[in-house]
Structures are given as C-alpha cells and as structure tokens.
Amino acid sequence: MTSTFIVSPMTALDIAEVLALENRLFPQDAWPESFFYDELAHTSAGDDPEATRRYWVARTAAGELAGYVGMMCVLPHADVQTLAVAPEAQGQGLGTRLLNLLIAAAREQGAEQVLLEVRADNPGAQALYLREGFHPIHTRARYYPDGQDALIMQKPLTDLDAPSSAADLRSPQS
Image: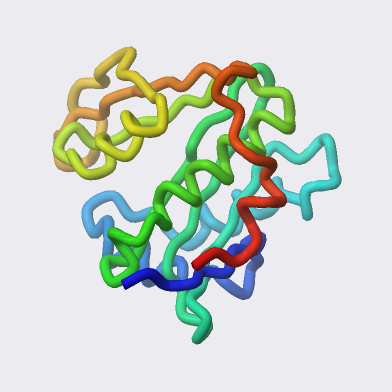
C-alpha cells in the first residue's frame, strides 16, 4: 500500500509528536526535548542564508506524523542530524523521500558533501543510505550510550547525481 505524505517545515508545534516518535524509535539514544527546540532555533523558512539547520515533518493525509528529517549545513558540509520514519509508514518510500529532500536542500545551499552517522546495528538504515549513494568512511567505536559503534557515511554532491529540487520533493506524492 502506498500512502500520500505531506512534507512541511518542522515547527515548535510539531515537537511533542516528534519527541513521542523519537522515544518510540530510539529508546536508548532519543534526543531530549530541548535538543529539538535548540535545533529549530537555528532554522528559517528556507530564505535566511545564515540559517544552519533545516527540519521537516511528514504527515499522512489524515494529519498523523509519519516521519521527520533534519540537517545542519555549515559549508562546505551538510550533516544528517536525524531521520526517522514511523514503523507503520516504513516500506512506502518515505525514508528515501525525506533523505532526498535533505540532499537537495544541502545541494541548494552549496554543500559539497553530506555526512551522517548511523548505528552499526541498523542494517535497514544503512541499506537506505547505500542505495542513495552514501559510502562508509569511518567507524566511531562505542559512540552510542549503550556502547554500540557508529558508522560514518558520506555522499559527495556532484552534478552527476543531482535529484530534483527540494521544492519538488516537498509536494505531496502518492
């Protein structure tokens, strides 16, 4: 089954739902509520060249939170700060869509590469990143609070792999 997801910039009004999904998906490494407010303090609607953060939420047609993604962009690098998809929305291309939105926004801001860290014990997320052109460059031993390693992955941003614009990726898709 394919659902339509509506993607929009994250606001403070989204944080309670985002935090609930964060705790549900990442019980051992969930960000505290203050992290989300701090990150949003560095965002804009996309028109402020000084803004270093961009965050989006994806909702179902019924308004339920299906996922979220956020990035930090300090040129020449962009970094995936977070990416999450609710279990009931997984397998419908939402993770790919959110990641590609972030990549397109990083490219539009002039980033030369996107970096991320992913738990070494999360093969599903790693598979998504590999499919989208990321490759492992380093392992941070015992990075997470439970002692799990983090795999650092990188995607160079070249004209050869340019997706559509970030604006195109925000519009509803079936």
